[in-house]
Amino acid sequence: MSAFRLAVRTLPFAALALLLAVEIYAADPAPSIENVHITYNWRGLGQPRDEVYAVVRDGKEFKASVVVTNGSFGPSGSSATTERSTYTIPVAAIEALIEALRAPSMTKAEGVAALTEPSWLRVNAAAAYQSIVEHPCSDKARELFVARFEDSAAVRKVLDNYFIGMWTDDYPHAEIEGRLKEIGAFKRTTGSQKAFMVPWRSGVHDDWNPALGRSVAALLPETSDGKERLAGKQLLSELAYDVRRGIKDQWENMELRCTYRDLISKLEPHYKILSIYGTSNNFAGYVESSDMPANLAINIVLATDTPAIQQEEVDTLLNLGSIYASQVRAFVVAHPETRFTIWYSQRHSLDEGDLKFHERPELARLRPIARQCVMLYEHDYMYGRRWVVTPNGEVILWSERPTYDTRRPGPGW
Image 1 (cartoon, rainbow, N blue to C red):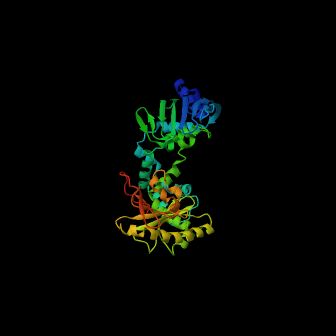
Image 2 (cartoon, helix red, strand yellow):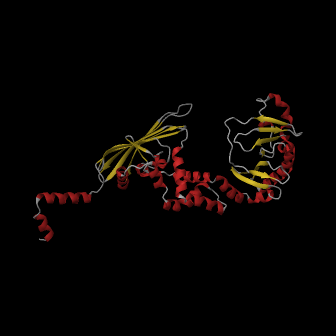
Image 3 (cartoon, rainbow, N blue to C red):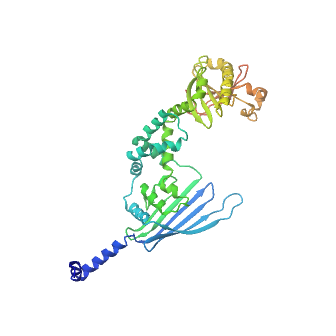
């Protein structure tokens, strides 16, 4: 008889029972679920959706049954539909949920810090940039972004503001509750629109630990509407967008000067490029020339579809730009305390559609000459005064500055 068998035979009953319990646990280490229920609901501008999950243990695996209800939507009131299905949940996903529920609650500052660890920022800086710049051009612009993205203190401020804001027509709600042998009864709820749906509410306390959202997402199938939000999949691109917004003027000036370098080479013999800002498929920026008053610039928007179109846009600007500057010169020079900008887009400053004659019927006389007029606006205010200047130099105040208007730092010159 082996020494091990002899030892077992001579063990007291209580010790033998303990040994058997250990052996059974080692053979079946899966967490013990009494019940887990998850709901994810969405309301907003679109078809309402309700997802209800029940998770149970099935031998050494875990099974989830789901009922998805897509509500009626639209003027005709499309019929609601219900779908039912089942799927298997990995043991590791249940263990991650238990770990997240056991973890101490995080304050907002702690949650933000957990999401902005320097090592994570360094590893993800390149992917963050790719998520917001489809066809990068300027190395300097990329380096500027990466330097800001890897600055954990700066990014924490950005992320803190990200969690403050909200948007309309998007109202999610998630809830997970149940009982696990390892931790007992639990319930967490959230209505957050943001990544990981933090904060989660437990009783009267908020928990900003992103691990909870991740662990709930891991329990859901790929077809769940809430999976990406709960997993924080959108965080990298949203964080990248907000980081770039903080360096917008400087970044745009670098990147767009590179993107539109051929067009700029055609402009620069005639105009100084003061600044550039982004628009879809167009070059937009502020320019001035040496023969213009010092307090005047032109805000140009030029089509860039093909090299031939770019050349036509530049040729037209060179002709009309000098005409428009001469047209407004006397008025601009007479008010040196004000910075003025000429609006120029689609190869003109104004057309009949821009002038809402139904609001100013007394100015219907301008209709025949609308394309020859210039729209001049007060540059340093978000909604500054606007004037229409006719070909003979008549200046007509078109709109006043609102009393709530504030000075703006840019974009500009």
